[in-house]
Amino acid sequence: MASKKEKSLGRGIDALFAENGVDAGEETVVDLTLADIRPNPYQPRQKFDTKGLNDLAASIEKTGVFQPIIVRQPDKQIQRYEILAGERRFRASKIAGKSTIPGIIREVTKEQMMEIAVLENLQREDLTPLEEAEAYDTLMTKLTLTQAQVSERLGKSRPYIANYLRLLGLPKAVKDMLQRNELSMGQARTLLSLKDKTKLVALAKRAVSEGMTVRAVEAEVNKLNGAAKKLAKKPAKKKSPFLRSTENQLQERFGTQVSINEGSKDHQGHIEIEYLSNDDLNRILDLLNIQSD
Image (cartoon, rainbow, N blue to C red; front, side, top):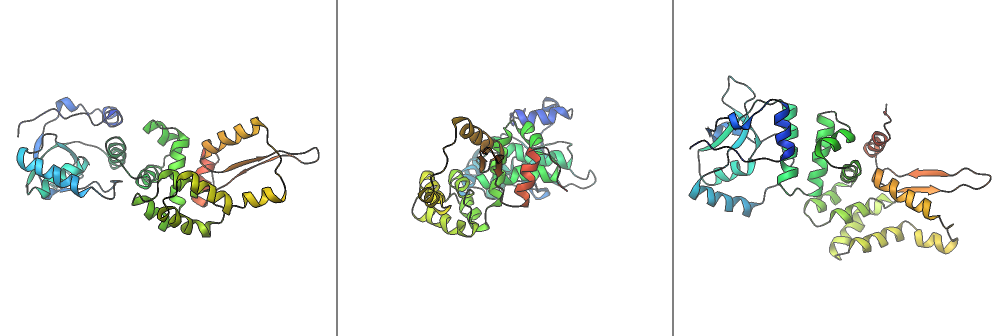
């Protein structure tokens, strides 16, 4: 197949290659044997749309692969390759019965490979909220990055990253519902505010079976948290617009429930920041730039 200049993979990926002296215009497209290629081990996507793959395979069977995949060769002495970008084309080519695929070989480290995998999927694929959360967690744990560094590399705000990472604190049963797109990101985030975590799975199942909106889930969470009961017993002291605004800003900043309790003449006020697990606590400490032991 004739060599063609590859299409852009997105600013983030191009910038990552550029930082390491890679000039796509000078690269050569070669035919690679499918049997010598394996998927990226750091691929955040857990499932691929079967119909989409079959449609792509039908197209490849008729016209071939026009955009080369990008791979790396871990060991120059062994003809084995790992995919950096283009796993859908690789999978579809196998379905189409092809034995080779056009590819570009690039020299990148394992760490760069991991970052490229996350960037490609975040920019080019529709990951589920849970897969996106796990992608951010992979960057932080495998590359020893802070939320601030992940935020800067991906061009997303720290609260945005934090809100997704909080999903990892959900029970497995709820994560499964989120992964199957039975629960939305908004519903899952609302469920995280439930104080009695033993009721979380049951409420999640109700939300799915009854088709509850995010507002309906929020109302049920408030009910279970005893908000209505507390108001009936003793009217809560009305907070000033400044305190309510500050609470909202802090909740957006930390991606969790934050309450500011105003003090009196004899008592100082205090701020309560809710966390779900040790990992969630470490996430909040990271946002505060506090190193945990």
